[in-house]
Length: 268
Ligand SMILES: Nc1ncnc2c1ncn2[C@@H]1O[C@H](COP(=O)(O)OP(=O)(O)OP(=O)(O)O)[C@@H](O)[C@H]1O
Ligand SMILES: [Mg+2]
Image (cartoon, rainbow, N blue to C red; front, side, top):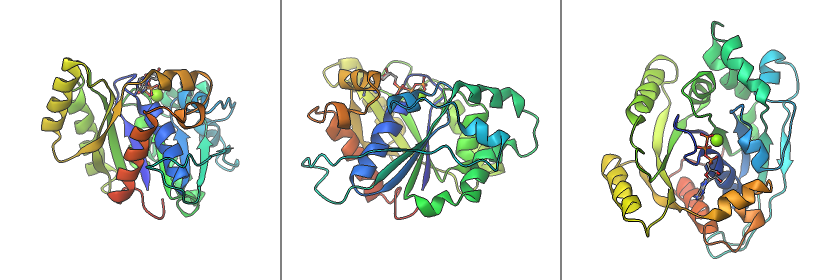
């Protein structure tokens, strides 16, 4: 399945979620592609990838081969991941030139379908069990492209003050796009991140989010841990850098929830 991780609010954990969910799904045997749809190229940096190519290069030259890079995945054999076969993890990286797409294609007919067409044309659905899209912090062209290509949208939300601000605009965007462009798009749920259960405010906000999205909030909650920033600074996930970190379990649990709910299945 193609899953877009969205929130136009910045710094809520979208990129961290795509990197770790991708890695966790690959550890549990899935063939995973993560696509960096953000000109900030944070997801690429998260895996230590610096690329001059990005979706922009393919938008400009549709016959070019996809600049896909493989990330080696190792099983952790933790209690929750089990000891099954390891899958694969690939990334389609980004580069700051992707920023040009926003202005360059604004009046292009069919500009919403650029990514969906690439996925279709290169038969990525046949090659992967899951395609995860890391969206930029805006509701612009790349987020529109991601939501057009996706079957599911997952809203990443920090359990911080103002978490719910702007969410109505995001729902409006998804619903308008669903009506006009992608009828199959479905909001799979809300993932709460950076949660510090020792903080009363975080607990209150988590309850507020759970009340607001009672039927669509994921049971898995991602805790606040410095391990995330530390590992991303060296171009790794915490699975690779701090496999003993308790936070490892949160993304394993989230990946498991995606599998159990059938959001990630056999084929992308
Ligand atoms: N669970 C967590 N606990 C602590 N820090 C975290 C957690 N998740 C992410 N971070 C840190 O918070 C910062 C923002 O995270 P991230 O880049 O994933 O957010 P984002 O939503 O992708 O941001 P942007 O909107 O700019 O793309 C990063 O420094 C990251 O390492
Ligand atoms: Mg990001």
